[in-house]
Amino acid sequence: MLLFLISALRAIIEMIGLCFIAQGMLYLLAGQKRASNPIYQLFSLLTRPPRQLLVRLLPVGVSASTVGVLSFACLFLLWIGLALMRKFV
Image (cartoon, rainbow, N blue to C red; front, side, top):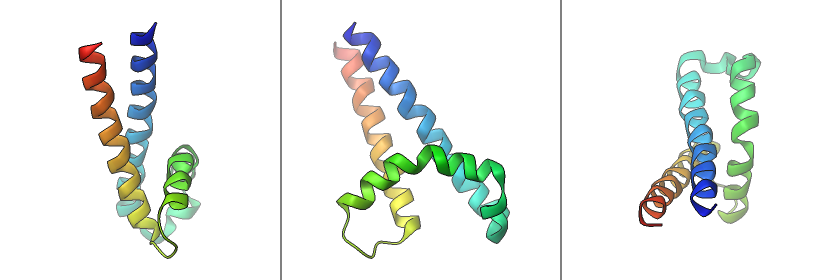
């Protein structure tokens, strides 16, 4: 049961991480028109919870791009940690 929970959580984190990567690619490709792009809006909706959590933890005044990069980095470290946990459980 624990192995299943670790695997499920790792899959969810992997999906959100891939959404961060896709959102970053659209940020580069679409430029200023990204706000009207429905796919970018979908990725923004899916990545909003981790970004909001990190905004509450970081000091006031941190830029949105920094929050996005740090959110992805935290998710990546959590994903690696869950992989190690899954290997040793």
